[in-house]
Image (tube, rainbow, N blue to C red; front, side, top):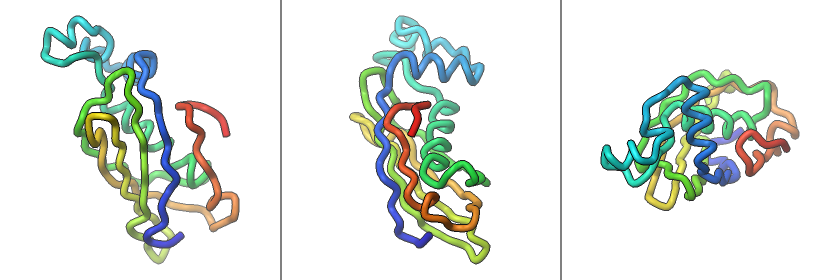
Length: 146
């Protein structure tokens, strides 16, 4: 793995089901993540994705690329533009550091039609490099299969 390596983009359709299921799975019962009328009353045009769902999607993006043996050591993200139903978030990543012990840092950006939904870095420990690890490609459907 080398600095500058670019991960293939991953397109994630933002559906109501994904937003609500992510909120429920993370026990985030804030109404803005499942009740469109309540979200509008609070100034949002619709429900929107919570940070815990975004964090999970970022982690999945990294482990789908680097393989199941990759171990996430730190995920540091910041939210920007909301993910609303009907949009698509495209995750991209670039390796920005590789330590002597193989610990790798990847800069991640998730953009949608409004702007950058998420930006941040992920540090991960990688197993010994193998062709399978280097060629893994994430599926286009959240929770999908390769």
